[in-house]
Length: 328
Image (cartoon, rainbow, N blue to C red):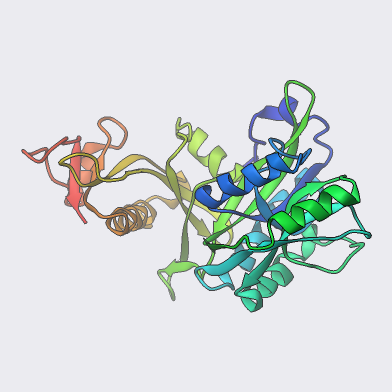
């Protein structure tokens, strides 16, 4: 199956190579706070890349090696604990080596270094000018006096963050000509869920940024990945064989949290191997973890007869009924 590049080839410029990096993105609340500090420090990269901790600096990867690179990402994530509890702050500087101010990183450094060592291999391996020093960049290319002032002003800054995903970022050319970095794929930290051991083992994982192979699998089923959804991926021997799209919404008004199944696609060659049912079970577990009492199927998105055969119920008098639903 061809792995299409998100946004089309034109958006990526010279597709004889991809410019990739591996990062830990900061959670939204802390990221917004750090971006405010970056704005105050005049960071030239603000708006071109989100607040992050770099594991693998920019490296050129051939498109033919993208699948291997993403396999490295998933294996590295699987060898990590499910979450890394980190701290960012206080501010420091790399001056006079480089004119950069940054937030120091502490906390689960053993787990962080282990993740970095595992992902720094294969297509992601590259020559480094400096040893790995975990940090969150605040600003670059600033005069020494400005760096000193920023470090002094943020001497007491501290923020606790919990990171649960590792992300591959890709550089692309924006329509205004500026180079920007956007997420290409991510992987949840922690051991992969494997079902069917001893028979036809199937690896299940969920992502907020589906890789190009999964996007292509969804496209084959006529599904466009909706922003804000989670995608559950099924892989066998490293190859994508199915995917499910789930929308999770937090409690609103008198209603509780809601899980909606938007689509399920399975490789025709996997017919009658139970991939679809495994994806539905994983989707139900995801909805339950978000606090939903049931998982609804978006009307027309999934075959009702198939869901009925799997025990999904007809609409009833519960609020906001969908085509069919199952308790979770």
